[in-house]
Image (tube, rainbow, N blue to C red):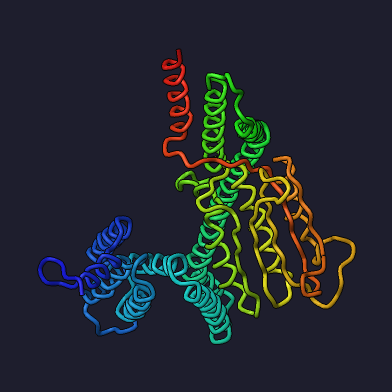
Length: 443
C-alpha cells in the first residue's frame, strides 16, 4: 500500500482531494451564510411550524445547507440528502430566504453534477411533489389562491431542476461533439498515414522497376562476360573492368533493395531484413514442416558444388521461386512428399535448375492452371522474376517417377559460377598482378 508523508494512505488522500469544494461552491456557501445571518439579525423570516422554537435555531439549518453547498459538485448525492434534511428543519423552525435559495442551488447541482440516475430521479420527484402540493392545497382549502403557493413550489423545485437538466444536456452534447471531432481527427490522421504508406509503396515499385532492374541486367551481363575465356594476349584490363562493373552493380543492387525496404517500411523505425538467399532454404522448409503437420514432408536436395556462390539477383529470384512453390504446396498439395531440388543444367552448365514437386490429389488437372481460385498471382510473380533474368519457367501437373500425379514448378536461371572472393576483387587483382609480372619477366 503506498504511504505518503504523515503515514496516511495515498488512496485516502486522493479520496479527500476528490471531495474538496470548488472555488465557486465556497463563494456560494459564504454568500448564503452572510445573507442568512443578515436576515436573521433583522428577524426577516417566515413563521415557524414549531412555535416554541428559539429564534437562533434557524441558523442550524442554514449552517447545514452551507455545508451541502460546499459539496454541491463533488459530494452528490450526499449533498442532496443534507439539503433535504436542512430544508425540512428550516420549514419547521422558521424559514430563512437564504436557506431556501441555497436549497434550490443544491437541487440544481444534483441534476447537473450527479449521476444520470440521480438526475432523472430528482427531476421526476420535483415534478411529482409540485403537482401533489398544488393539487393538495386546492383540495384542502378550496381556494384558487392556493395556486400561487403551487407556483412558488414550482419555482423552488422545478425551475432549478429543469435548468440543470437543460445545461446537462448541452454539456453532454458538447462532450459528444468533442469526442466526434477527436475521432474525425484520428480518422484523418489514419487516412494521411495510409496515403503516405501508399505513396511509399508506389515509390518503391517505381524505383524497383526503373533502377533495380537495370542494375540486375548489368550484374547478369557482366557476370556472363566474365565467364568467357580471356584472349591470349590480353593484359587483363578488360576482365578487371568487367569485374569492377559486376561488383559495383551487385553492391548497388543490394543498396537499392535496402532503400526499397526502407520506403516500404512506413514506420521507418525498423531496419529492413537482409536479402534472402539460397542458404536460407533449409530454414524455409523447416517452417513449412512446422506449418504442414498433415502427412506432408519437405526435403531439399542441393546438387550444386559445395560453397558455390551465385550472383545476388539469381540468389534472390531462386529463393522467391522456391518460397512461392512451397507456399502453394502448403495451400493445395495432397499429403505426401514435397521435394525441392537445385542442380546445374546438364546441357548448359551456366544455368541453375530449380525443381519443386508436390503431390496432387485424385482429381487430374489438365489445363495448367492453379488448382485453387486466386492462386494465379503467385505464379505470375514467379514468372516475372524468372523472365526478368532471361530464365525459363514451367508450371503444371505432370507424372512423377512412380506414375503418380504431381504438381511441378521448374525454373531455369542463368547463373554463371562466381568464385569465392573475400574482398570481391581479390582474384582479379591477383590475376592482373601475375600477368604483369609475367610480361615483365618475358624477354
